[in-house]
Length: 366
Image (cartoon, rainbow, N blue to C red; front, side, top):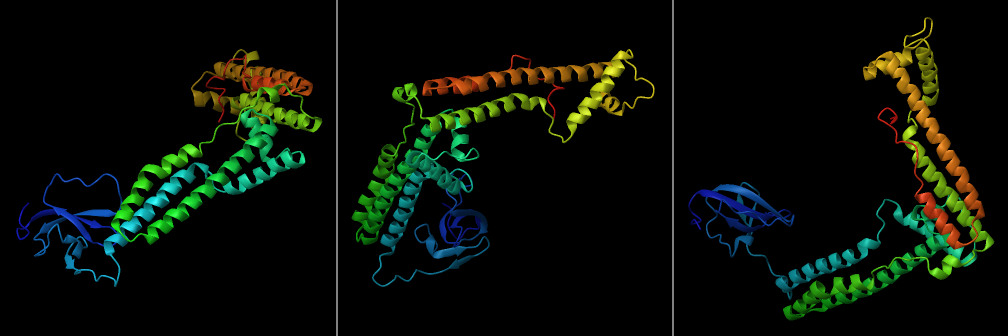
């Protein structure tokens, strides 16, 4: 390494929060570790402070322009600085380990805790008191989305809550125990043993212990006949699932602009008149909407008129097809009697597709 008194180009690594120097080098190819945000690398041209070496550079502070010798830290009476530093490091590691285990159980969205509490209340009321959940509640929507019975969805919610409660109790007991062990450690040997436990044991043990197994409907439940109130809940859940599926199939043919359906009907009447007149705009007819439509797509008037009518016909075909499917499924939903029937109808709704062609580029309204 170049002697400290020779003016040259240096890279100085310091702590972000304290300016404390932790390393320096004149190697132009030096690359700091890719992980970590506690350090800051500054270029410096000039002579390093006299007496500063890699062994004692921690005494100096560097703000990017000049070095200040802060001197040796005054040891606290009766405190081993290295021991305390290692304790702090183990406390941080413990917190990270516990957070790693708890994170999968945490809500993924803002206000998720409130949603969970209300969903759990609905689930408990259904399981413990037989209360029918509200049609606008969480359970029906969740069951429809996951294609399971409302009672099964309620049981999943309760099971997930109990699994989270067990995890919290055990991780908190472990956190308290290790925190006390770290606080009471008096030797580096004790801290080394604690570090080994944290690195090699804590997270793998907990991850395996708290793995949540998905709940599935058992054969006994499938062939069972639901009670009248539960059957009513499942029929409501199937109707919600059907509504969402039918709306999803119709959505590509629906405009997102208010009152656009009136514009489309008016444009269709003009298109019919244009085609009836051989492709020309009839005298006295206000065809501004069709003219702007054709101009935007650089189409002849007759071609634009034909596209408009084809688009309307396609949307009408989809509407008629989905309406027929809706009526057929509503009849099937009214006739379900067992959990097996409910499962079959739910699966069929999920697979519902259009026989009509997909909307073309003109049918995709924005």
